[in-house]
Amino acid sequence: MQSTTMKPAAADPTALPLRRGPAHALQALQAIVLREVIKFSQQTGRLISALVRPLLWLAVFAAGFRNVFGVAIVEPYDTYIPYDVYIVPGLVGMVLLFNGMQSSLAMVYDREMGLMRLLLTAPLPRPWLLFCKLCATALLSVLQALAFVAVAMLIGTDLPVFTLGGLYALVALCGGALMLGALGLLLSVYIKQLENFAGTMNFVIFPMYFMSTALYPLWKLQESGADWVYQVSRFNPFTQAIEWMRFALYGKDPGAAPYVVIGCLVVFFVIACWGYDPQRGFGGLTKRGGGGG
Image (cartoon, rainbow, N blue to C red; front, side, top):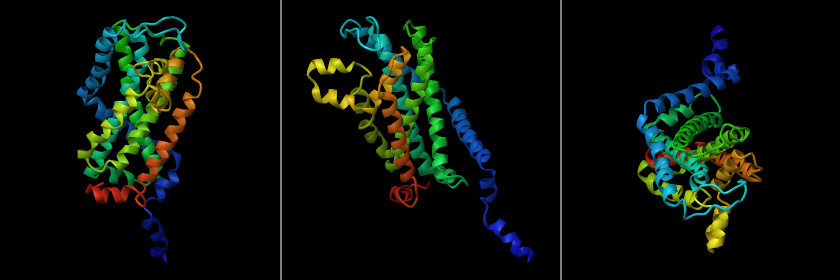
């Protein structure tokens, strides 16, 4: 009788963690986020490359086109602004976009090495584990974006970050980081091997970035007669993330942009969770892709 009563506990190794409930879930969140932060802190080159790319655009591209692109007095601006001020939210978006895609690459690598399988077999709901990975990606994106903004201000870009609008922009920054991190999470489901990553990214990063308001306002596209580019840019979720940050920085109403960003975040994350379900997408993908995790 004694051995019979002990069997249920022995047969269910997840019983104790599940009973711990929220404490165990938060511990997992802390562990996953801390692991990613520590790994990032040991990759100095990753931070430097994340800063050099947008700073080159700011120092060279913005300087070269300062007098070519006239930025008229349109929302959210109350006066004429130099082009480098206009382009900064777009370059912040570049930092978020590239880090989100880099996190996708890291997850594809972890899947091939078997680390993702090890993580996803933890005694916690799979969506929560994926949410922890998403939070870690978003945190690294935000830290890199803030570092870029600090350097941009040091080289003379005038940004109203030390205002209430700066706080609003931080919220928008987090929203954009989460959305693009969720997009990276989604892509990691359907990129089967590392060899396919570069081609897939070329069909994501460049169209999403250049068909947006990162480099030029929408009215410029419409004025130039590029109607199809204008329409694509309007419905590009990356555009909405940039406009949310741009309007929030000046304390203006961003319109529907936050709802679009949050809606896309939810959609991307839900589809990613569906894809990582071994009964649907993830298990089959790993078998076909030859990965171990």
